[in-house]
Image 1 (spheres, rainbow, N blue to C red):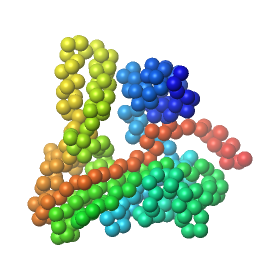
Image 2: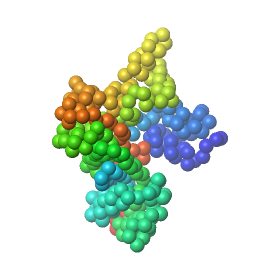
Image 3: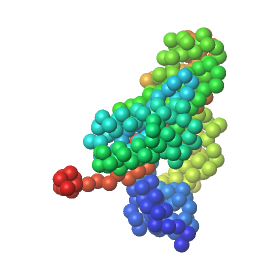
Length: 304
């Protein structure tokens, strides 16, 4: 057996499938986690596509921008009560702002950095003791823009955090009201539409092949004739870019207009070239299976 109990647990958290189904999927795919996810999707045993955007863990997402640098971070706790706690919210703001000047490339490096007189890890431990719940800095992303333009940020209800990096031909374009309006709209769109790539050229073959296999298995399960399946899969793949690529997606405020067309429109308003350079999107609890406690157990915990 080329996998461990930890692998089974991770697959279960990713897909929501049963323990035995996860073991079988890993066995069938020689311990390859991503192949096992696809196996479960094909068998209709995983709700990964739906659960990926479901709030499955409590906490907050924070985002901040200073100059042309932006940061977005996800910090988890165990209950929504703590997510509303002033100390927890203060900590999220502190970490978000600290990230703007941080040199950390990953969470472990971030935890080792100093914030005041303590390391961030020591601060996490102190807050855990004070609040009585596990606090975890799960992940963060940063974006820094070279040249003229702006890094925009948006946080939706503490659940979704977005950074969008937009370049401008000149400082006059970057300072225009039209440019800033566009950046704000792009942030809202990324939060709502959840693009995976910037353009169709960015979709790698592995992603296409993986989606094709899932489509094929789903169509077989639906009883579609074998001779029709290749053409249906091809049609679905042709539509893939409009579903997962930012520039190809339909603007959430105007479904008759693509994002690339929206940018062209605003170039005219702002008086110069505008370029989308990148984006980051963090969804609270994505990929985490939330443990559901019953009320009696919760009350018992609070009175212990």
